[in-house]
Amino acid sequence: MYSKKQLMDWDKEYIWHPFTQMKDYMDMNPLVIQKGEGCYLVDTSGNRYIDGVSSLWVLVHGHGKKELVDAIQKQSKTLCHSTLLGLANVPSVILAKKLIEIVPKGLSKVFYSDNGSTSVEIALKMAYQYWQQKGEKRRKRFIAFTNAYHGDTIGAVSVGGIDLFHQVYGPLLFKTFKAPSPYCYRCPMKLRQETCGMACVDAFEKVVKKHHEETCAVIIEPLVQGAAGMILQPPGWLNAIWKIAKEYGLLFIADEVATGFGRTGNLFACEEERISPDFMCVAKGITGGYLPLAATLSTEEVFNGFLGQFDEFKTFFHGHTYTGNPIACAVAVESINLFKKEGLLQKLQQKTAILKNSLDRFKELTHVGEVRQKGFMVGIELVKSRKTKRSYAPGDKIGQKVIWEARKRSVIIRPLGDIIVLMPPLAIDRPTLEELVDVTYESIKAVTGS
Ligand SMILES: Cc1ncc(COP(=O)(O)O)c(C=O)c1O
Image (tube, rainbow, N blue to C red; front, top):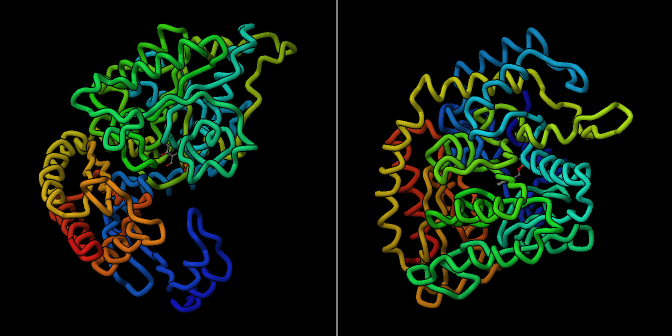
């Protein structure tokens, strides 16, 4: 056994943490997690914390769910890994069939990878190659949205729109056309939601009109731009964007990495606006949060564009070593089964309403600018001045301070700048959900002095 102190020291000595200013981190005592129990994380001292962001938006049924642990154990005794390059394995076949049964109509093929960024990278490469092989050589660009986040690989960053994360890589990125996202609280077009008539849809159409002949596809996070701070699209917006893309013959990539598997209330966000994308990227919740797995789903039309004689080289020359890992696929199959077995989405409706009610009182806090919620995705935007919507200075580290305060109160959450995010596991029970919200409220109040 290693001592608690040893683990903390080695963490600081050896690990470079993602999205973390390591200078700050080195000055802190790291919190080392040892166990997961339902919707709780337990540290090396035995302290329990509510897992308020589902271990980075992945947890669905809670930690240590018997059915999922059993599925992993059973599969690992049978086959741990075998490549999908020219070979098949049992769980990947079963999962592919299951996925096609539950995703929006029109999607018929599954290409596996192991994280959200690669699932996006694959969609971009497929869309590009599809047009190249169709003889439409001019189509080399993508239309994406301001504030978009599609992952951290270079292709995914090229279609991203969060300057803080993406600007520094500018010289490495390919050119993308950007349309304004509907960040209604801070409208990039300086309009008011009540009267704008969704002018950003027209702005998108203008970009499409101008560039459609050189564009492969439109890429979008349906319903919610997650990493930008849970920015919600007004009803009808997604459907309008999709219709325009289709009218101009563009492929449509729905990045459901964050929104997929129940997060927004439906199994997939696309369902709410009745859209059928040409590609759908899924990851995070696909395994219920147990193992890394992702998939890029595409249509028959796209798939057929890659068929040809061996020496025509229309092959999709892309694949990762752990593509279609049998253990990850087996646990994903079981996780999807549990949605139905446990009536998860039906129960979620009620819990979403409870969450909505309990978030109401946040509006009383002087430094809460806006509370945004879609299903089990919540963003609470903190501002220095509610009247002018002025943000805090980055050096104030307001978001960070709130999560440290929450940690003292046995809740683990993670902010996006000054936006406090709540992403509880879908299976959370009512008392734990209420405690999560209460602690968040008290923590914001303590830090902002509201
Ligand atoms: C919409 C979206 N796409 C892609 C990604 C990247 O996923 P991953 O971190 O698994 O690479 C994320 C991660 O938050 C995301 O929210």
